Length: 156
Image (tube, rainbow, N blue to C red; front, side):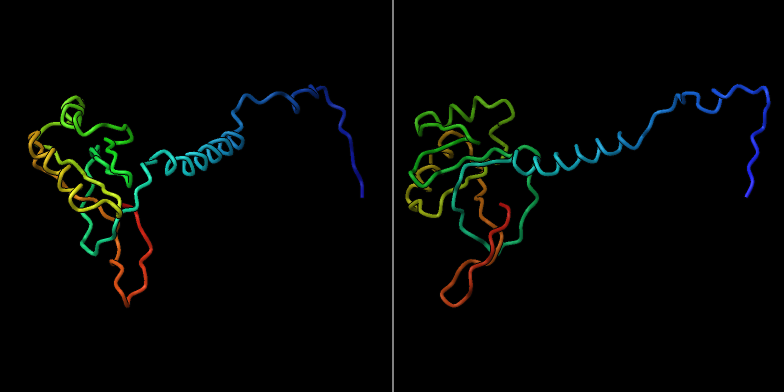
């Protein structure tokens, strides 16, 4: 095996000159890491109040872009979104929301342990304040009966 070294007058530094191109491999790695971080963090950013919702076998409807949730927790306290509100200030708080109007739906979430009378009392407060469009929120699935196994809760 032979090798020859040519002795010519060319500049040896030309072979090892700097390249002025962007190395995209680290850029792609950073983008993929950011994508994974956002994929993991996105479901965590939609934290709601912990409410044990009942299930329903009704076909789910399309959720609006910015729904207004009114929650009745198990201790019978009220919250609009995640902000606590008293029963006396319920209508005033709804009126004070910038994206709320009387013709938009209020999505009412009630814990499974809330008595029916309390639920109807809150609905009466909404009706007397002019909010007649109320939708009840449940979990998707088959309701638990005496002979059927429990369904896995899905997103509300």
